[in-house]
Length: 87
Image 1: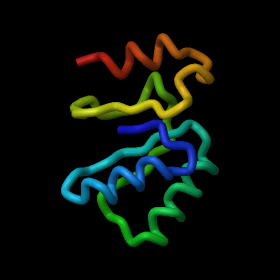
Image 2: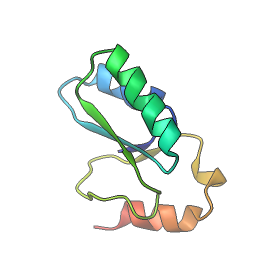
Image 3: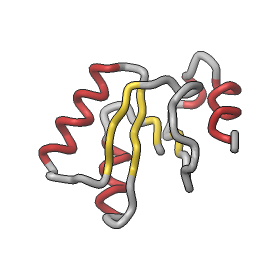
Image 4: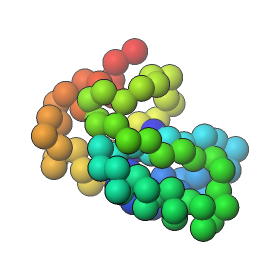
């Protein structure tokens, strides 16, 4: 799972690891639409993009959660880190 913005890092990881599944999240619905458009251009099917914030996204059985240059800009970075760490 990654906090994704326009999906670039999520798509790059999906291309590098095509047997893995990736979930990109962002609270900004327009960014998620852009991420979906970018993914569609690459015909990649190993990632999905969801609108959610970093303290309430669903799922929880992730092997890796990545925050790329965004944790420090979040309204509640401690809450986002706690949510990512939860079992």
